[in-house]
Image 1 (tube, rainbow, N blue to C red):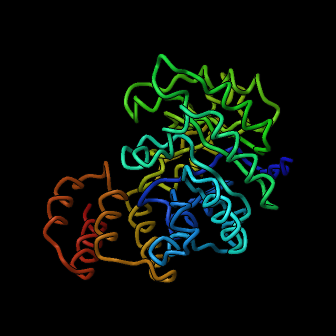
Image 2: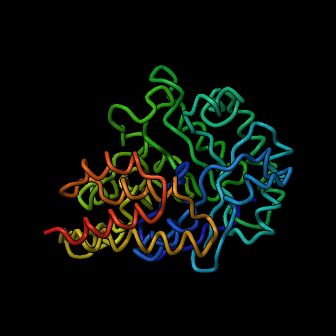
Image 3: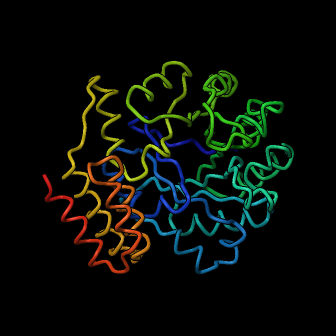
Length: 317
């Protein structure tokens, strides 16, 4: 039986993203107004074995509650065991990904590949719903390709078997992240199920979020690529939804956010020079001098060099 999805006070949710949504970044998004934040995609097979390399991505903190862990596998037993482990670790929602287009994950018969196996999806959702005490949500895509658009059928199956909410990325697996998201499929799913529907795909501004909510009737909007290096987007969009105003960050505020991220990464013991370098590129994207900074970052090998470059950029007029 489905557990009730929590009542959220706002409309915005952070998408799980590989190498992006670690605990430091999630906490920043939460601070800026994301109502729900999720771990990056975790292998249920590895979590079931309590693999140390994967479990380090399963950190959570009371500040991010309700906390979401997203998992993938085609092995029902491993998914159930992983969900039980994550529930004990303090996660409040378990989300299963049936829509990841990664070839590596699909070669395992997981992620988006499972859209070809609706009965397997139904089995996984039913077993999970019966095994954990927290809400179970699922993330899907429109279909495997344009000739096999089956998201409405999958959404109904998930609801019937105990899903508490469903996220729909309005692209096919074949599309990956190319082309345009077809929001009509979000609208169709919203008409077909009673559980909350979370729309995902091509939301990069307040105007986009407002239009998705209005055109599809979805309950919440999930933001992925628009949030990379830009946790402020949640405050920006929330402000637009409330007042119609488009607010912007200054260069100094963006760089200050970068240093806040580094502090959090150190606090949660996930800091690395490699990550600091990557985040410096993401947080400064679009700023004057960012192309030159990117070139210089490719050659640096220490945090001290990165810090110096970021502070120098902040001090330039």
